Image (cartoon, rainbow, N blue to C red; front, side, top):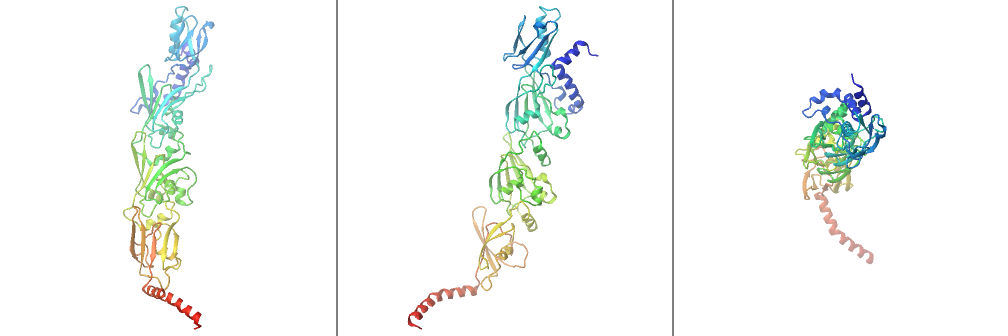
Length: 479
């Protein structure tokens, strides 16, 4: 049974109200906290310590002329009637009341003092680690006027939001809250914000106090299945801000790109599965012109810088996305990411054809077909089209003049060199490297003249000037 003085303390002092609130919120989750190999969340110091900027009310029981409201100055001491300057900075309201009572004991018989927090000062916290903008932040408190028990202290999530959210390299299961205790002590407790988002356990979202430090560590590895959940959390970095990503390797336009969210993917099954407008790897590859026919989409690597100066390396298998719809492989990118598309060691023609129909590849590629074809010039083809398809798109061989046995394939390589090879043509063959190879963007196919056409062209070259002379003779002499 609570005695009268304790009841008064619990109902009129801020510390007492905080104690009641703590009992209601934290006790049900003590068993969970005890399983963690760190300081118990329920044991962390929750007392509010007075400081400069707080507005308090000092009640001197049955001596109303000594009762009053005070704004704690930066020095931390308030000036009270009869007893003068009283230092209250760094004390709880209960400790401040005891200090004042001891001073008044010289003048009053058994003084009964209470101190209430009317208007708390903004608190200063520091946020470090894997957040968008690490640094010091001043967070405002709400409520707490008069006898209103609703003093709302800022939470860990509020601090992370002020720091513009955690990065995608963060380990949100081991967020550390460091709190000063007394003059020189410190408590550290680990918070699992992933559990907060999954179960809503309020014990993981404790309120902050002045001087707290929040450290968000870097994840040792990235779980691709959880990456999207982290991106969607309200304490993650902004979902709408564009991010600069570098794409290198087997894409048509390697370089740096500004990847913005939005429904910008082309239509198609793969595009729909690729995140519905999220700033993902797929979207980045599309901005880089799509993958080439030499790309190995099973071994894509994403390199992500961290706040510790190290780099995370994430393996991505987009073939798994295309085959089974595993959208977790289409990772949301972060500012500063580098995506590397390696060269395949072996080209599977069936897979290459399938990749050409997805949004990983550009919608068209351009190939030059020149020489003895019916419609020489540039032709647009679907990516990963073959040499035979290019010849047919150019109208086929020019009857009577084309050398049908072989053609020349001229290619500009990624290293800046130019290669030329003769390909024996067999229009009846399927895709194969010997007679019907897959073409790349900007390839040139040259169809030479056959022997008869070459001979005829030489005769015409000689006969051309002679025929002109004979025409002039006929004109002047009437022959």
